[in-house]
Length: 209
Image 1 (cartoon, rainbow, N blue to C red):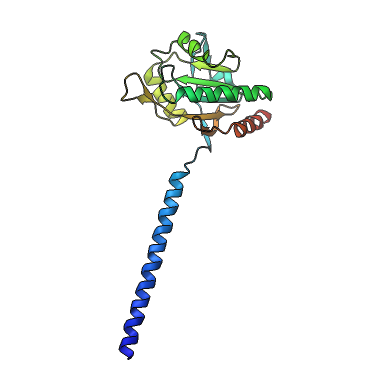
Image 2: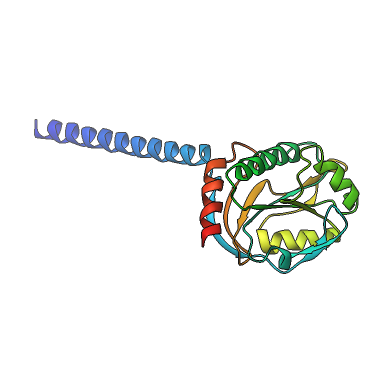
C-alpha cells in the first residue's frame, strides 16, 4: 500500500512540474510574440549631427551652420524611389502644414541618398509634387554616394546602400527631430502612422528651450 502511494505521489508531482513548465514556455512565447508585434517606432536619443555643407534645391550652399538655433526634422529620400519615399514625403508635407497652422517654428531637411541623379533642379521638381512652400523645407544633394553613406551612418545611425533592384536604394524611413544645438533628440516612424501631434508637441517644447 505504501509503495502504491509513493508511486502515485511521484506521478502527480511529475505531471504538475510538466504543466508548470509548459505554461511558462507558453508565457515566454507569448511575450516574445508581443514584442515582435509591437516594435518601437519612437525613442529618445542623443546623437550630435556632424558638420556639413551641401547644395539645396536652388543649388545654393546649405549646412549645419544655417540650422543653428533652429529646431528641425530630417529624413532620407530620393526622387526616383518607388516604395517608401512618396508616403514619407507626403507625411512630411502634412506635418509641415500642421506646424505652420499652429505657428510652430520647425524646419524640414531631406537628404537625398541618390546624389548622382538628384541634382538640385531634380530635387526642386520632386519637391513641387508635394508643396510650393520651400521656406521651411530644404532638400539636399551635392555630395558623393560615399559621403552620404558615411554621414547617414555616423550622425543618424541609419544604413544607406544600393538596393538589389536597379536604380533603387536601401535607406532609413525614420523622422529625426534635431534641437537648436544640432543634436538628434528623438526619432519617429516616417512611413506608417507618424505621430503628428507628438512631433508637434516635442518641436514646440524644443523651440521654447
